[in-house]
Amino acid sequence: MPRSRTFELVLARIEEQILAGRLRVGDRLPPERELVDMLGVSRAAVREALRVLEAQGVLRSRVGTGPSSGTVIAAMPDAGLTQLLRLHIALANFPMGDVVEARATLERASARLAAELVTEDGLERIRDPLLRMDDASLPREQFNDCDTDFHVAIAEAGGNRLIADMTIAVRNAVRHTLLTAFNKLDDWEKVASRLRAEHHAIYEAIAAGDTEAAGDLVEAHVRGFHQDVVKKIIDGSNPAAP
Image 1: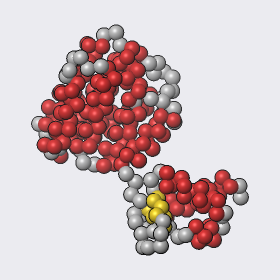
Image 2: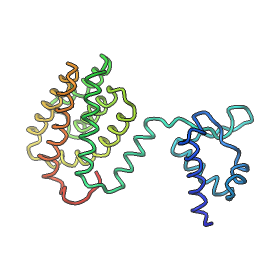
Image 3: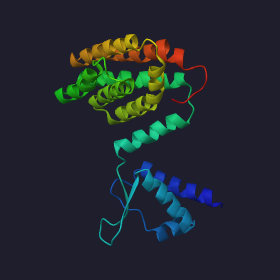
Image 4: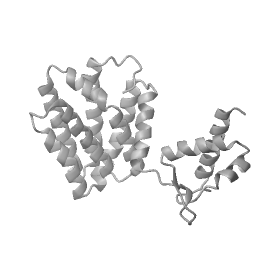
């Protein structure tokens, strides 16, 4: 079997064990020699597969001979998951319409959850970038960063880690597309004022615990901005990754 196929086999078998619940966070993988015998593959293929999984954050290697040594299944940090999703979106050449649809759906769910469950600390995290965006002298790139922080804070305030991670990944994937649109705008102040007003309305709905309004407002905000502003600047008819 070609090396590339044996490398994929090792990845598939380890993934299968994790998905079936036979390998959990903290469990140790068998030593390389045992994996070679179990799978009937070369040691080079095993090492290559383990390197990939370690780079992705799925495995953690520790030297030594104690109970914590060896190759251990690690809990993937949230940042690792969002990075993988963000890169996948960027590289998969999804049509912009598909990305916007996914973003609107996810952010609607995030906003509704935030309105239902947000704490005072969560509200403060949402409010901070909102107030920074109110500065009319804020450069466009910093405005875009604050915009991203605002939407990320809403996603995190909802309390559902999976929805939050997917929302954050999609929002960060369109960050550069939005900045490109911002930089090409002739009527920047008018657009920035619109965004500020919509952001404040979303915040007020979340703070008031109005789940329906929060969801409706953030979905209209996402769809409306892409339809009225981004699509006019960036050719949305071409399948283009954000």
